[in-house]
Picture 1 (cartoon, rainbow, N blue to C red):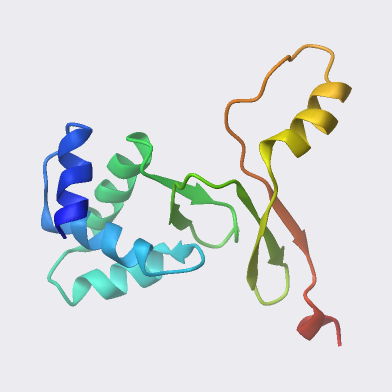
Picture 2: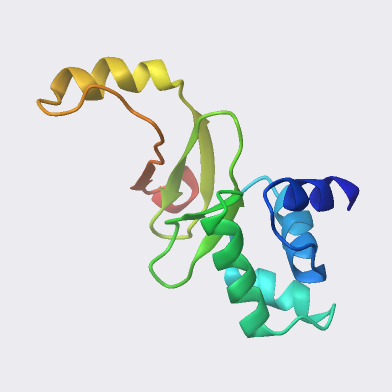
Length: 136
């Protein structure tokens, strides 16, 4: 909890139970978490639906978390971290696998093909397909 409070304080955000709870849940997950799961988990702590959405919006605008396109049915979120990773997402079961690629890998490919850009700052890539389990 202390680390979350310090993080929020350092970027000028008020330390609230909802913010620290969302950060705690996302920290303990190895894949993006759906809003439905967050709402359900936080309801146990008496944090209501609208507070969860406002908290997610605030943390996303602050650059602490990001929305991940896993499903068109609902939103998923994860912490923004220092290593570059992307997501392979099954269109059948919505299984998510993280893959790590270095920024240099993209610079070589993307910027070589671009006619109007010379540098990349941030990127998130979600690749969709069918996982081995669903393909059978």
